[in-house]
Amino acid sequence: MEDQIRIAAFQWLKEQTNIYGEVLPRVLLEKGFDYCGQRVTLVGPSGIWKPRMFERIPLSLTTTYDGPYEDSFTKDGFLNYRYRGSDPLQRDNVGLREAMKKQIPLIYFHSIVKGKYLAVWPVYIIQDNPKSLLFTVAADELSSVENFLHKSPNDVMADDGEYAKRNYITATVKTRLHQKSFRERVLQAYKEQCTFCKLKHTQLLDAAHIISDGEMFGDPIVVNGLSLCKIHHAAFDANIIGVTPDYLIKVREDILLESDGPMLKHGIQELQNQKLILPNHKNLWPDRDRLSIRYDKFRQAG
Image (cartoon, rainbow, N blue to C red; front, side):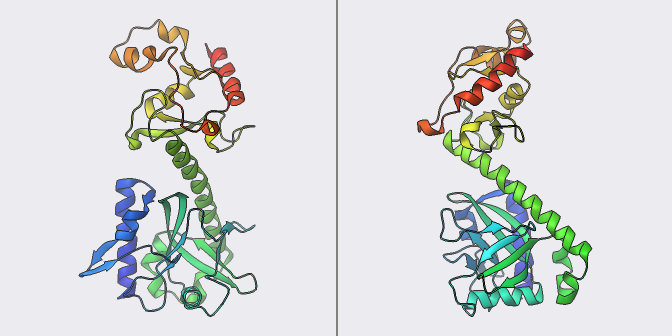
């Protein structure tokens, strides 16, 4: 029955991410879902979580916002997950060790900001490191869940191809964590509204880089970000709209001279010389030096 509940949990997560996106609120995960009259919770007080109806093997692993454990990626691109406590025989650690031996799929929740988690599934324990009190965790394709009951534990990491596939998938998780963390932190700083127009529908908001990711000074930090609705993000990226180092919004001159309808007039042209809506905390305001670099590109485009 545990296997069926585990698969039901994966399906439920898929449905929730279709509704909310990849980042899920903790309250939703704590509430969980109903399975044959039983409440299945996906997270709890312990980072290694086992619902009441599970005997030994956990359902999920969670990294807590500002929590006590410093989980990190290995040099090989896999995830380190710390033991619970320092006793290798503590029951949660024993449960994860059994999950490794049987290659049972788990869920990994990574805290992005307080109360919000990126959900990754399925993940597998692929190595136990008692000396360093760490488990090594790898993400895999969803198809691995469908046939995990028919696999021998020795078959799961039997060849270099399987190892390389899991390594690649886990590396993409790391990229997603950085992207989602940047978005959530920027939107949180701006109280989940567009800094140009005050739109508050989070499904329509992006975290725009002032200096593009991958460029010098393009760090994924709040002071290099602006919370923008999708229209204004596209306009900012296209240098239709610029922002001065003094936080004034500028519209490209040729755009100001156009006549095209209410969206252009009210959505873009009327932004000319308006001030940004800034975060409450000054240390989260856009970095003036980065804005200066970006504004030079905007002027060159005009």
